[in-house]
Amino acid sequence: MLLPYLSIKSDFSSLISNGDWSFKDVKRSETNYITHGYHRYPAKFIPQIVSKLILNYTSKGDIVLDPFGGCGTTLVEAKTLGRKSMGFDINPVAKLITETKTTPLKPDSIDKYLNKFVNDFNHLKNKNAQLTHSQRTNYWFQPSVQNELDRLYLAINNIKNHRVRRFYLCSFSHILKNCSRWLMKSIKPQIDSNKIPPDVIKVFLGHIKHMMSKNREFYELLGSSKNLDTPAKMRLTDSTEKFPLEDNSVDLIVTSPPYVTSYEYADLHQLILLWLGDDPKRFSRWYKYAQQYQAFRGKFVGTKLAELKNNKENKEFLSFIAHKIIDQLPNNRQYAKSVIRYFSDMQKSIAEMYRVLKPGKKICIIIGNTTLAGVHIKNAEVAAEQMQNQGFILKDIIKRELSNKMITPWRDKINGRFTSITNLQKTRVYEHEFILIAEKPRNLSN
Image (cartoon, rainbow, N blue to C red; front, side, top):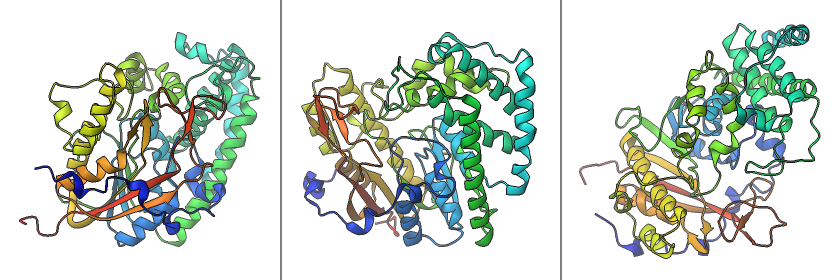
């Protein structure tokens, strides 16, 4: 049964920002402490928010879930605080990054691999150290750069220890954008015809040494708190389907779901997807995704490529506010379907969050509003209404100010996508976001 529209605040923007949750004085170096700076990832929430929520609502040994795990911020923070954690994401790149970030390696042991790796890389110079790449991979890389990257990649695959090999592969993934023809300041696929290719091995070694330093910090922090063995598991899972968890099995949910038609995560991470997809013997799953790239892109929550799964889907998102938003969008445009699919997917995910959360425990969703075709897309208000209609009891709505250093504040007025400050059609968004805190009722019979 739908709750009345007036049960949800009609305009979250009237709320006063809570300075305790804005973390305006936190520096970028502090948001990238320990392993958080291993790999670039768009719109990731800062670890200070996650840490505060975990400390407020859990005890050591509790289980924390992030159904939109992304690059693993929630899992890293849970591990440092001695909480077991699990994350889900449909993106294999997210899984690669998260598994690397949550796996502390013995510093003295990993230091020993570097010299051997450099020797292997140099040894491959006089050999046929090239892969056969797809046309789409070739599009992004100059031949000379691609040859150097091939040598790097093959040297990485000579590493026998799978955790160390994954550590090096994460670094390799991180530098691909720098080494490609991709316009660095662009958040969408765009060629920079004037880009001067960097020294590949210099860039890689610089980042791997940075990761080694941060790994040492992580290892020592976990060692001092006796949390080295605290489990953190990332699963390749579609969060709009049934979660691979038992009913009433999770102590806290902390997540920041994608915004509708915001970042195209598949596009942003396509370079490593394509590269590993060119190696089907080692990475058969990645090869499948690369071969079926358009279908893969369409599976992401919030993508503008989303298609409705069935004719009833537009009636399944249980939200008066969502229906009011849909009614304002031109229904002859693809993005109208995308918004419908987004709200439907979010409702399915929220239903699963309710199922797996223990009674009396909290769910915390960090989400902001945006604009599309001149229509205010009230993601936060819709999510709050969907949570209430699912059975959650809203306990708090926190409005926090965003730093422009953490997220791109400009969108195109016409298509709603992120853009640059030079775009004449730009409009400013993401000055604030909301933390929705709700509880699953203790007495489910009521």
